[in-house]
Length: 120
Image 1 (cartoon, rainbow, N blue to C red):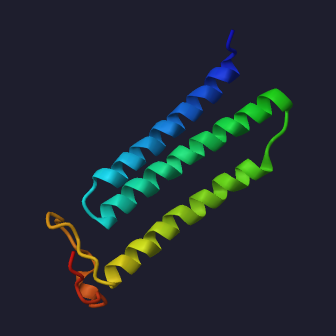
Image 2 (cartoon, rainbow, N blue to C red; image 1 turned 30 degrees about the vertical axis):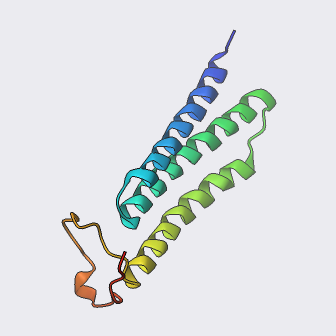
């Protein structure tokens, strides 16, 4: 018989796997690097956070230990994943990787820091 803690841990891990799966689908389906980066960053951050929270809940319930490593992993992920995605997207924009032709807004067009347009 499953206890409440087992259901919570299983639920968190399943939710994390589903978020990560949707990020993978977004990576394969979206048309350009900018929308792909958005899909992967948002979903993988939430997915991995749920998986790590599930692991931390398990260790707290079964062993009575608060895992500092898992907590630091969550904090590190929240600090680095958005910054890394922003830097990769910014570098792609500055090197001239084209936006999707149906993009409705280019907020950085007035900066004048875009490189020569790359051909596909």
